[in-house]
Length: 63
Image 1 (tube, rainbow, N blue to C red):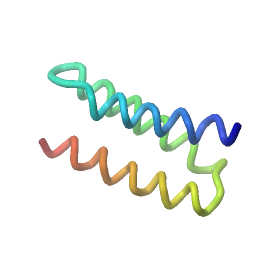
Image 2 (image 1 turned 45 degrees about the horizontal axis):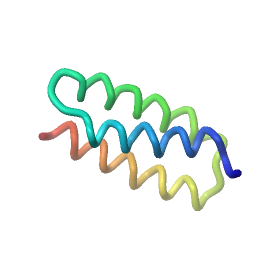
Image 3 (image 1 turned 135 degrees about the horizontal axis):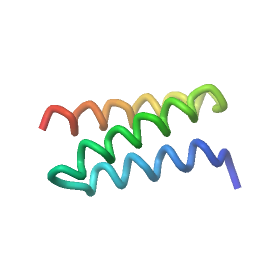
Image 4 (image 1 turned 90 degrees about the vertical axis):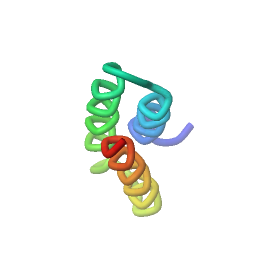
């Protein structure tokens, strides 16, 4: 099954990437929170993936 918090963080980032307009800011904030929650409870490999997801969120913010 895997790490639930890690999976939720990945899903939150995907939802943020699909959002637009006013909803985008809220979805990015939710995704950031999910990433933060997941980070402490992940393996080093998962942490690398979370770091990549964080970079994707940063790119969304600059749009």
